Amino acid sequence: MDTEEKAAERWDAIVVGSGIGGLVCAGYLVASGMRVLVLEQHDVAGGNSHVFRRRRAYQFDVGVHYLGDCGPDGLLPTILSGLGLGDRVRFHPMDPDGFDRIVLPSVTVDVPTGWDRYAERLRAALPGEAEGITRYTEVCASIGQACRESVFAAEPGGKVPAVMLRWSRRTLAQLFDHCGLSARARTVLAAQSGNYGSAPAGTLVVAHAMMLDDYLRGAYYPEGGGQVIAASLVELLESHGGTLLTRARVSRILIDRGRVTGVELADGSTHRAPVVVSNADYRRTVLELCDGRVNLADSAVARAESAKMRLPSAVCYVALDRELALPNANIWYWPGEDVDAAYARLESGRLDELPFAFLSFASLKDPVPGAACPPGHTNFQIMTACPPGYAHWGLTDGPTHGARYRREAAYLGAKERLTEQMLDLAEAAIGPFRKHLVHVETSTPLTQERYTLSTGGTAYGLQAWGKLGQRPGIVTDVEGLYLAGQSILNGGGIVGVATAGARCASAILGRPVLAGGRAAVLGNPDLLPERPPGWDPLRTSRGLRRREARGLALLDRVVAG
Image 1: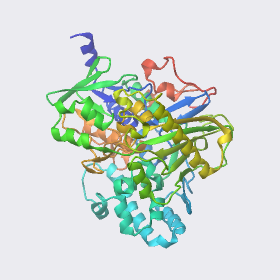
Image 2: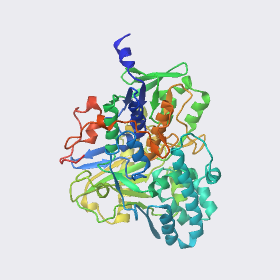
Image 3: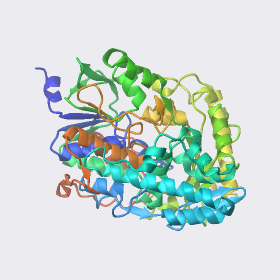
Image 4: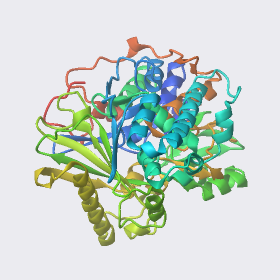
């Protein structure tokens, strides 16, 4: 047996991709005594929870704009507490009287915590549609509660509530029709659809209700930014005997006669294990990493090939040299009042008129001094949805398959136009600020694809896998191969993928790690490392072997960890 084979014998499980779902799964496995390797193709772990820094002054969150259900008994804190990380990640509440401000030309609604208060606020803003709104909120609240209870069920199945039987396979547009709601009301109620990236006609009521239910239980921001969540999970992994390798791109999941045997990296090296968890993009997992046409059933390959992704997004990262007098809330600004027409334009490939602008103010949300920007400055993001595919950007393929785009004139022109459109909508929402700009940078769907290798550059996973809203489960037909991530059941946003990661660990371990409203406490906090003054979650997230490597972006101020 050669040295490589001896090294490969060390792993009980390999996790491909270090998004939050993969890290949570790895955490529960390593805390249960398994020898776990996590492989990440990017420079740092965390997927869409990671941050980047500019000008040694500004730290921008890529995907963590706000999190739902993070109170003391919230789902994400419960999952982290089971790993012994309850005191390592602190969540700061946003304004409970209005964590989201929905702004249309003719109506503004501040979304508060709690279903009853939310319904009252909606009826006050849209008094002519009170009956339909009551019907809508009753359905969504019931579904949200049923979905949350199912997460903590010791065994799958059980009695399904009548509301789930009626609405589980129906769309949000069908619910709006059932409630007799106008185009304006539909736009208000679907204004936060940017949190999952699909139109009412392409979104199951269950997906919409789960998103709303999470936030109505309380909206929060992780102190220090999203990278703190990933770094804490890396600390747990490494302190319990696991290993994270960054800049380690997996080229193949090795399968022999229907069972997984390990992975091969892009540099030709291999790692062996009887269990592999793919936290990578689902379509890429099936069609490329697993070489599905050789190793998987024709039906599985066909469903992956025909799967439809949710819409991709673009984000404009903005820094100002002054503070903004705004509440601790996000703003969802819709310049039109017909949500269905807005999404139809996107689906047809048009971006001449943006559907919405989502404004997220990190410097208002984060209580850690200096975490987002220097004192007296503002750090915020503007997000919008984009058309599917590459045509809008003047390309025929994406960076996953080697397409070069960053200096292409067509791409640069489309990106510049989009940046100006997003700045225009943001100024329409909060007033002029361009003369105070000190940094502007736009991330397109191609940027997302480049860093996460996601199909089409979407951060939201599958929209349709066979039937609309259907998603693959955790266990596959290949022995030892499991799935986690945005495209899997329970996946969707940081809380959703963390839940999917915990359930993936349950499937591997053969026992639930979430049951009865709590998590099994497996992690040992006494093993976790001390955090020195100036502890840097970005540095920690590079993994022990690359922690001190050159090239880490720094800030010119000490940020409390």
